Image (cartoon, rainbow, N blue to C red; front, top):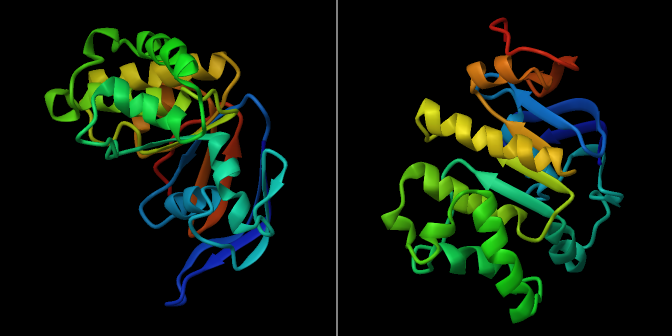
Length: 228
């Protein structure tokens, strides 16, 4: 699903966001990307989203070579990827249903497909009774569930989550992580960048630890260690 080969990102100010990183994430894996602030987690996510370009190396996602992917191909590339952010990024003037439906509309789904898919994905994340609510009428957990529903409604093979529990209380955070596990069990590759030590330690998934833009360790069933 993801192959990085000698990947490096140097910003204009000379800072190295990623430094000669090589990584392989297979189809169907659940992987935590951890590390202290400045370790490279956000830069790696931005490279995967093609928000920034690498300075050196190669990056392949779902068969696409991002280093040569043309701007015209970006909409198709991003259709096959779901993304969940810490700050939800919901459209404030649209209801829960409309926020999720919008993700289908921009990829050209028919009204019939939308009417069939949106209620089922809202049920999956436990929001079927909140379909007509607006984001400012939701709790933080409900907003993140809406964001998650929007990310998976088009059934992407890859889901990226950047600090998805960062603004949530511990109980709600666990509910979101349980949903991510469920999505992974259904076949979606899930990559989560996080500082949430307790969640990482208890789930015992693969943990890739970054430090100074490089991989410090990569453990199949790891823990969030303190020696970062």
